Structure formats: structure tokens, C-alpha cells
Image (cartoon, rainbow, N blue to C red; front, side, top):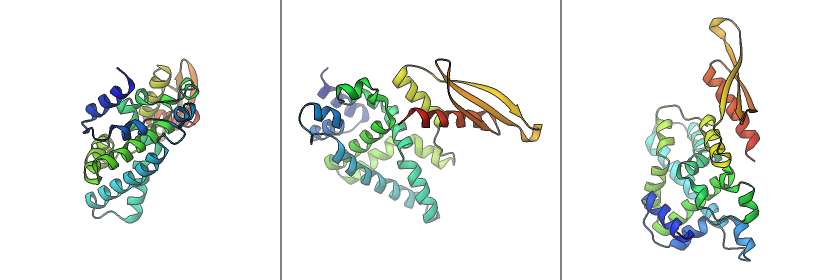
Length: 231
């Protein structure tokens, strides 16, 4: 299957109608690939710019009408969490988007297909392409479908940057390794315990964290590892 057919397969898997396929091809073309072939403008940067604005509008609209009593300050904070790199990367990993990106040789060898910042940009570019191809109402519907797992977390009051999930998806995509966690210490009286955890990749410690529960300590360790490993 050639690359164009793979993009068509991605759209079919997403349930997106195929209109102007060239828009989606451009959305999945990184600058490194375009520059290698002397087509510096045939990349996804402009679509990323547009998609960023479209996503912010869709999320703002969703929050405004779904939570009519929510303050402006709270909506602003939640919107920032929903459109941040971590949330976009979570969407990208769920789509296995890295395998559909056209990257330059150096970028691909350097692990670009699993780099969260690059994947987040590609999601925004896809949204920009979708908006141009299908219009704002269709884009709204399909983007909210992409975000459904994150929006469920929001409704249940547990919207967080789930660093354990992000780290696992990143390490499996980039290194075919599943992170392992160890609780290495605990202190304090029973009613105020503090736990310390480490997270390991291939038996190497890549993050440490403390928390009032083992899960909280592991999340903190995963957060440290995520911030260290992802540029």
C-alpha cells in the first residue's frame, strides 16, 4: 500500500469523508520531508496554524454550552488543558498517527514519529484540513468524537494530564518498552503517609516522584520522566 492509500485508510478508519485528499496529505507532511524534496511550502505548518484556531473555537463552544454555570476563569483553564500538547499527543497516540507521517530521513531516524510535540502539531494540521474540506459543523462533530475519551474524563471531574498513560504510549511507540514502577520508600505516620516512586525504562531510572498515595507518587514519577524525555 503506497503512502497516499495509507492516508485514505486513516480517513476511512476515522469515518471521515474523503473530499480533497491533498489537504490531508499536506497535513501529514512534516517540514523535514518537504525541505528534503525542495518543496519548502508543501508542509503542514499553515494547516497547523489554522487547526489550532479551529480547535480552540470548538473547545470554547463546547465548554460554553455544556457548562452554562462555569466561570470564565475556569473555562479558560479547562480549555488550556484540553488543547495542550499532552492532550493532543494523547489523541495522536490513540490514532497511531506516527505511522502516517511523512518525515525527512533525519527526523524519522531521530524518532520524530513518536515525538509528542510533532504529533500534536500533526493533529492540529489534520483539524485544519478537516475544516477546509468539510466546514465548521462537520469539523465540530468529528473533533469532539476524537476528543471523546478526554471529554469523558472532564465530565467525571478527573481531567488530568495522565502522565502514566502518556509515558507508556510514548515509550512503546518510540522504544517498544513498557515503563515499570517501583515504590522505593515511604515515610510519615499512617494517617499522613508519603510514598516515593521511580519509573524505569529498560531497568534505567528515568523519573522520580512523591505523593500521598502510591498512585500519586507514580504519576509524579511519570510526569518527571515525560518532561525529561520529550523535547
